[in-house]
Amino acid sequence: MSELICAVRVTPVAFRDLPLLNSVGVHEPFALRTIVEVVTAGGQYGLGETYGDEPHLRRIEKAAAALVGTDVFDLHEMQRRVIVSLADDRQVGGHGMAGMVTTSSTGDRVLSPFEVAALDLQGKITGRPVSDLLGGAVRDRVSFTGYLFYKWAGHPGQEDDAWGAALDPDGLVRQARKMIDEYGFSSIKLKGGVFPPDQEVAAIRELRKAFPSTPLRLDPNAVWTVPTSIKVGQDLEGVLEYLEDPTAGIPGMGEVAREVPMPLATNMCVVAFDHLKPAVQQGAVGVVLSDHHFWGGLRRSQSLAAICDTFDLGLSMHSNSHLGISLAAMVHLASATPNLDYTCDTHWPWKRPEDDVVVPGALGFENGAVKVPTEPGLGVELDRDALARMHQQYLDSGIRNRDDTGYMRSVNPEWKAPLW
Ligand SMILES: O=C([O-])[C@@H](O)[C@@H](O)[C@H](O)[C@@H](O)C(=O)[O-]
Ligand SMILES: [Mg+2]
Image (tube, rainbow, N blue to C red; front, side):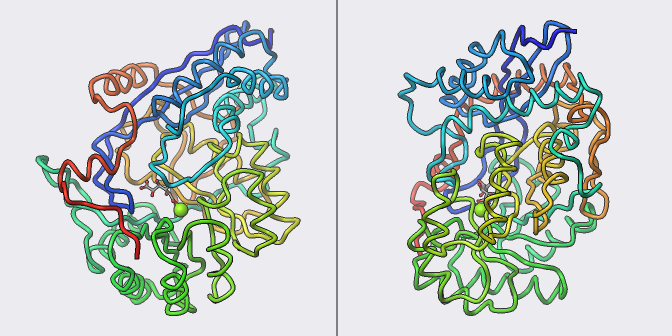
């Protein structure tokens, strides 16, 4: 059976999303992803999933063409070809994270879905699950966090969705109850940076009252100044397991970290390998939120885990809106990362179960955790009808780049990004 790549298919898709609020605006009615299929001459395919914004999609298409002819076991050659394919790249941004990641290595972001697809194929060829290729699962279930968002009752002009509004502490407690009832999560994260900090502190206190022993996190996506961050951190002593990206940049995070009692976590100021040294030197973060989509895939995320271990940094996992291929990859990676100290983030509850490109049934939540697939590869199969339907949805949606701010301003032209 040949292990050479004979084709790489790249398909942008869109799936329904809910009006989730954040510091840069509000989620649009559709979220974008790109599905990557790496096909061997032997007729097997491996799957990867990544962001769907146009500049990123163009880079993915170029890299895909460059990978034809490589061996799926030669990840170094794949990485080399990806980097070469980007040599004359002059596009700016377009990473699909709406400003939630300040900078990151473009090469790692482009490599990621191909590396995941190659590992999926390696697993299928050898008959082993991806977790085995990553050194073996140290846990057979991976626990996730109930990820709360302030939200509108529904998209403007549409019916209310099943989650309803969450614009105050009571709304968030209702949302948390529904999410915990349906998924069984045993920790909670609140996406903040939407209302003034005292209102978000009040919301965290209500959540603490409603869920007295559940670990809590708050993430305002760096829209607080250093003094505000210190005040909130000190107010919430003993309430948060970590405070995520209260303020922007490594130096600012370092100033806050010295004055607050809980660890600071980040998926904004440490998002590439060259950020680790200054972050460690300045004591800026206690917990790095890894994310294989921008750290270069599963094996490079394991390198990140080793660095965190060396420097006594905690490790957690970040998420954006995603589909089942990404969930499977996150689960395999988390299962094979011994020093993953916290439950992982996921946006999973915010998408409809029928909106996916993988055949249903492979991944399910029980008690807030997903069982690590034991089938060869990632353990998920492509549903080609669903892929075609969701690609059509992409074409029809008219959305080509995530634009939370533009969508917010189409509803409220006066809206300005906050800084408290
Ligand atoms: O989906 C969102 O609105 C989130 O704010 C996301 O874009 C962030 O990247 C992320 O979840 C985070 O932890 O910062
Ligand atoms: Mg974050």
